[in-house]
Image (cartoon, rainbow, N blue to C red; front, side):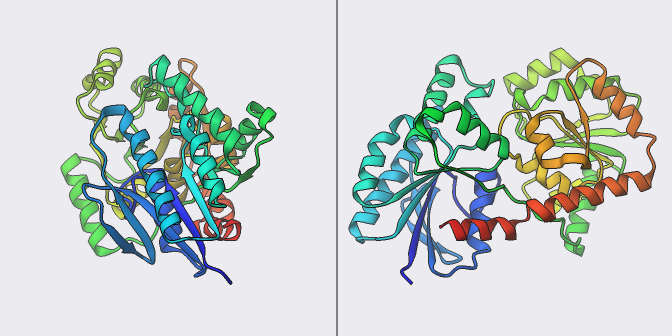
Length: 384
């Protein structure tokens, strides 16, 4: 059987340090079972080398630091390098898989060139990037148009959420887009090693945090993840536990705004503890939390939600269709009405350990049945 070439454009590359697309690509490569597939991965770098990683060819792409346009430029250069390599090596049986829709504005031009080379174009539309509040109106319009163009030109849209697939079908039905649902993945928490246990002990000591005496939030530090609501409601609750927030908070504008609006620095329970890039340590921090708070409302299947369901027993999620689709009956839900989350926090302080463990079992069953990486990699390999 002829070798199948799959080019992946749109992630920062592998090995993954952080981020949904990066973790996905890492798992796709390291858990590969079908040896007839050859992966070629664009990697953001300070040089233009090529390296091998678990059998995948990683081609480095160097781009100047040009602000918010950098991501678009990086993807375009990656596509150019991809097309050049396919031509030079006269490759047959090729699929180009673009993660995200930010270069959709230019995709018509690339689609023609890929068609000439008899290459298929697959796109992961991610999760309505244009809805994010961090963008101004011009960028929002550009991103919405990019999403539309991707729906028009892609041979296949691979959606990691059923609701995202429905949205793409309804919003762009005039293009009759071909879509498929393949979820994002997670791993049921691994066993704690002595090394990780020691790291966890040091981390807890440094941050003054006790096991099962904290609620946890992990996620990008952006307004649409509802930090303001979660912090305000937590401050209203009667819990004596801490709220531990793991996020990339620099002393930025949003941080200062939050401080003014919530006065969180006056509440000793609220602890911004920076980022944790050690995957095993982060799993243990999740596992040792009393509960997990999830406020994401934009996008498809959210990686940090899957990781929480795989590790934390008690999960309190914002009631939106994306979150409900993933967690079903394994979690509690809250809305943005004043007092709603605060009263839920007070309620879950008094539920039995047995009830918490039952919820944890349901959450892990959801991951095993629908969201295990092994299952998802098999689906991708069958598709490719």
